[in-house]
Image (cartoon, rainbow, N blue to C red):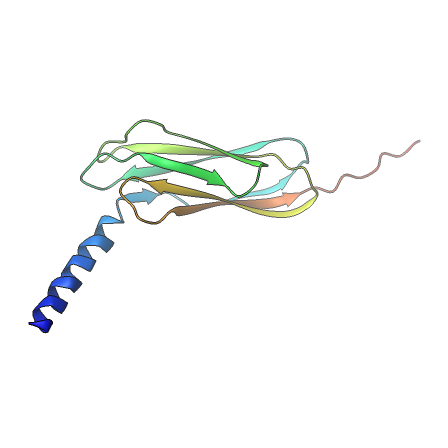
Amino acid sequence: MKAILLVLGMMFMGQVVFAQSGVEFNTKTHQFGKVKRGIPVTFVFEYKNVSEKPIVIEFANADCGCTTPVYTQSAVPKGKTGTIKVTYNAALDGVFKKSVNVKFTNSNQPYILTVEGEVLVDKPKSKN
């Protein structure tokens, strides 16, 4: 009896794991390269609904105020694509790596999108 319950439990777990893979991103990381401080840069992440049901983004949260995600608000039908536009506005010089956590209705865990690059150091202007 325990063996049967164990097998049934593992089958159920397999279905749950399979159900979580209903979204495919073209990429989850974008490298901006060198950017200027105070000038926003933007990248649009695209995803495809590969599940059987329409999906909706429950939330897309950035890890700081310098990064802003804007995403498709409506349900994305099976086989169609949606977007998450991530804008980074550098306030400090140096290397950066910022994350956006995205949670879909058909997934128990968030996807993590990353934008990274290097903010150019402002050089003082010469007085000549």
